[in-house]
Image 1: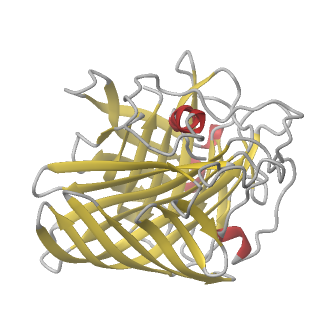
Image 2: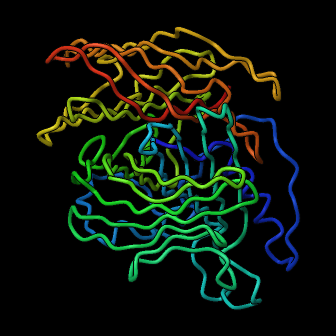
Length: 378
């Protein structure tokens, strides 16, 4: 599924200032979501048909759609086993359909605005540190391109090459307290979610996105936390999604799981929540077996039970941070626990996203795993 949170609201704030050369801070917002909307006839393309993804083109931008993101998450460890989690995400939001008449009116004028989030979980140190960047696609401050493959927001970037099912990337991000330099190489091909890449999230026409993942990326490089640098390796996950209007008006949020399991399989499932807290029938996901076969997961295929809550001392919000995930038809039962309870990103938008570990049973016996959990709209 995934995810522009109230981020779209924040990007609209940036957009409102798109004629002003000087960028300044924007006050944090406490509203969970007002997201992924759009009216028919607004001039943007809509996801209405299955899509045969073509690479490297589809790793690059799709400016004919209103929103798009490149979402990297992963779990890393040093040779001694010290654990870290990371998130590096890039969001694009179009102010309006491309208009040649408006383009070039000012060096600061832009049709696209961008946001990026960078967060590190240091389990042993008990630290979670998150930072963000907000800017417009002007004067080279942010953007995405296919040849060479590159996505960037200011000095944070993902760059590399991807043809067919082979993808290699370099992630670079640095801020006052955290830094990341990571090389990623795909070990399995991409997986198209929904109906051959058309992921329906609501009843209205075009309430869908084009959605694929590269679920297993071997990762190695260096990670810095408050002046201490570590050599790390592990597994990462890339989510790619673009759309114009995807969520029904009554959607209140979502709970998203992406897990690497010890039998070589990979699981993605999101539960869309209505404003009354019930699961939407448009919740869905994919179980990718070790042999590459995809098992689609509908809302009725997965049962989620909250095991533990955590209340943020910063926002006062109560999050369901531990879960039991059961998929009986797939022979899967997992208990999912956070590495740290406090993995709340309290930035321009507020949500919980963090590294998790899993343990339970699969078709072949005992399973363990790790991955990422996102809790939006609480």
